[in-house]
Image (cartoon, rainbow, N blue to C red; front, side):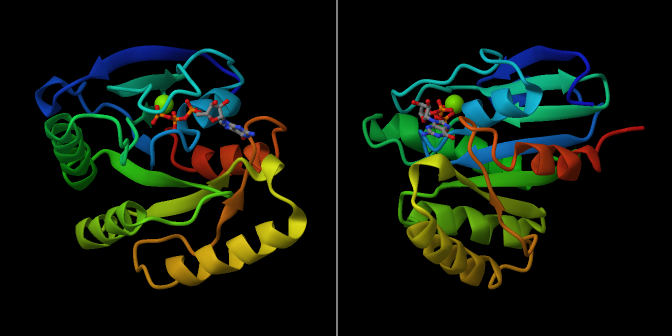
Length: 197
Ligand code: GTP
Ligand code: MG
């Protein structure tokens, strides 16, 4: 699946522009700069498919990528980008939240948390929203290459304790690095379960 064709389909700025729901969808959500676009690139083995950047707020649209006509990956804009104007932030957030709540083809949300950063109110808000909407989600720790084993194990325990409180959460956490490829193959196998045959 991930070795096959992968095409950028569309970047949606508004809910009215979403492409038709012809494929099961997996959306990548998380704070600005957490590594969503980098993870989509690592999973698909393409360096520049989704535009990644050290500057937060890089992804401004809901970007849809068609994998071999079997699965749609959706690279979302990040939340919690402090520099954006308040009205812009609220517009994005409303759109993201509406998308997450109201998209029947959405099979799974991959919620990314930076292994180096504390969970924030926004992260918990998204988990609560997904619980309420009964959209199943799984949490992925990103940038594990930049954390030493001790602090990483503590972080893992802390996040696992949090996800156990969320009925819509898949109970296991994936530890990943888009830089070293850690955890990428395992995540591919999990996501492939949602693809059309
Ligand atoms: P927005 O689109 O702004 O919401 O950000 P994003 O979540 O898509 O993050 P992006 O993939 O653009 O990556 C942000 C920064 O984190 C870039 O400088 C990446 O190089 C860096 N980064 C992403 N993944 C990793 C990783 O696994 N390890 C390390 N060390 N850095 C990473
Ligand atoms: Mg991005």
